[in-house]
Image (cartoon, rainbow, N blue to C red; front, top):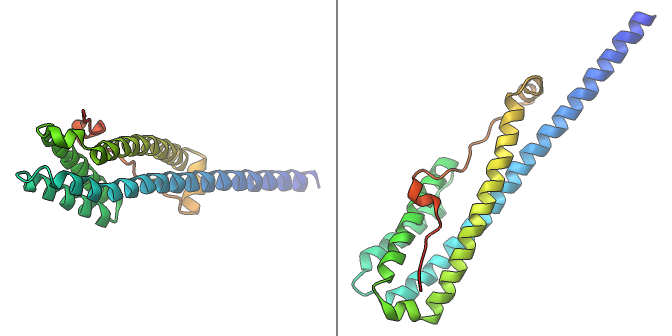
Length: 184
């Protein structure tokens, strides 16, 4: 009778531990989804600002059509990217083209003084900062999830219920790690 009671207590203990680990993994997975949705919202905001930026710059930068077309092309690639790797590459390319646009705009004093351009610069800078914070939150949550999924004994439950590691949202080149800087 005592042996049966001990076995029952061990089984209940394992069951309660399993439920606790499962719920913790679900929370981590949902936190990563939330983190990604925050990044996605800010990326969409940046994508929505770019056509206005290009239109404002277009009137002043008649001789810089290649730069403007590259920004639009990069934006479209970023909007169309569907998986994490493609999105990372597209966002890196978009950041690079924005830096080029801002660098070229330095040669146009009237553009630098344009109120619409100043407002867009402020909004893009604010959005870039929000993207950075959202990316940091997402990567922190991915790190927590990946650690739990790979750590024993949580890995047993993670494998049983098919919890998988997530990819970090990383920037590939060092120059893209900084938000575009514009001096108006």
